[in-house]
Length: 164
Picture 1 (tube, one colour):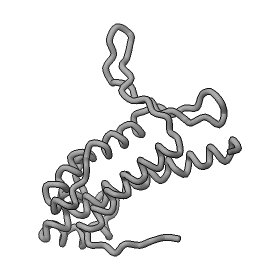
Picture 2 (picture 1 turned 30 degrees about the vertical axis):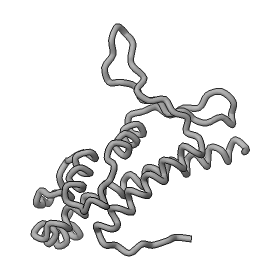
Picture 3 (picture 1 turned 90 degrees about the horizontal axis):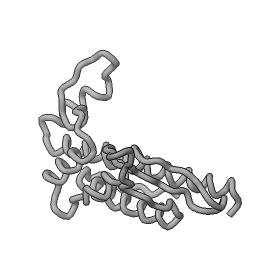
Picture 4 (picture 1 turned 180 degrees about the vertical axis):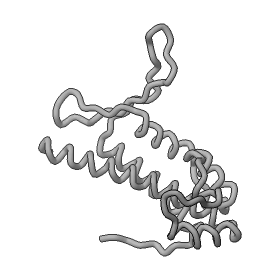
């Protein structure tokens, strides 16, 4: 694969991961709200029309829960068959948000994703994650996120749309 095509494919795959992570979080928040009819009514009537400076009720859509808290709350409300394996989703999101991605070695070699501990000791820091972002790595991560999105879709009772 030529250098430009390789990096374009990497950028597209990275975009898929980030888009899927956002979809999972927002879908889980919407599902939590939907499962509470009192809150759902307020969200459906308020959020489409709010402006900067307005105040809205605090709920699963507007609170500052992190991804782990949101997915755990989703799991506590969703049917067992729709539960999401929280750790791999959160670990991927944290690695992408707080890690370092770089290329080294041959131009056609995979980019690397490293995540370092927030704590250091004696001017040294622990490497918590070191992975090559190969096409197979991207396929595995995208597939894992797509399974989670499907579970959220089922809880939301949304129609499945295929884009071709």
